[in-house]
Length: 114
Length: 112
Image (cartoon, rainbow over all chains, first blue to last red; front, side, top):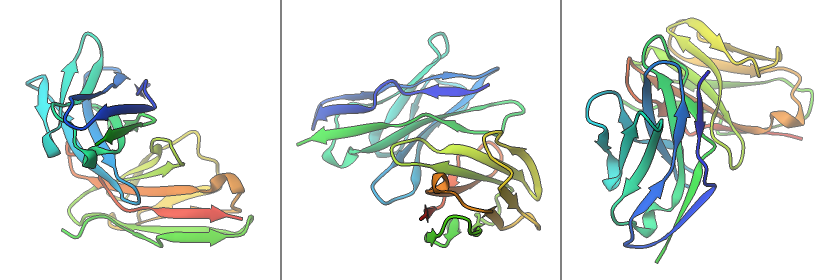
C-alpha cells in the first residue's frame, strides 16, 4: 500500500527566509515522487518530480526537493520565500514499476508573511 | 494543448438525484484519473483509466459511483442517488507515460 504523510498542517515563514515543507512516504518498491501546489480557486499545478538520478531536484518558481531513500522523505525547500508562495502544497507518490495510482498527502498550507 | 477540461464547474443537486460530470483530457494522454477533494484535504483517488480500460477503482467508492471512458478520450463520472456526504470537488487528471498529472479545474458538487 502507498501512503504519504505531511506532518505539518501549516508552515509560517517570513518573506526572504528559507522554507521547508516536510513529506514522508511509504511505497513498495521504488517511488516516483511529486510536489503539487494549489492556489485559491485554482487547480493543482505541478511543481517538481523525482523519477531517478540526482537526489536533489529543481522545479518551478525556485523550489527544490531532496529525495532521501533511507528516511523515505521528499522535503520541499526554497532558499528565499516570497509572499506569493503562500498556497496549499501537496506531496504525492506513485510506484515506479507497475504503478499507476498517484496518492496524495493531506496538504500543508504555507503562509509567507511580508 | 488546451489542458484538461471539466464540465460543469459547479453542480447543485438535491439528495437522491443522479449527477454526471464530464472530463476531456489532454488529447495525447492515454491515462485518466478521477479524484475527490474535500476542503482542507488532499485529493483522494477514485478511479483510473488506461485508454478505455478502467484498471482500478477505489474500494472506498460505493456502487453508486460509476465512471466510463468509452473511446479512450473523454470520461464521465456518474453518481446515483446522491447523498450529502458526496459534496466535494471532483477532479480529473490525465498524463502520458511516466509524466506528471495535469489537473482540470474540477467540478464542485453541492448536495442539498
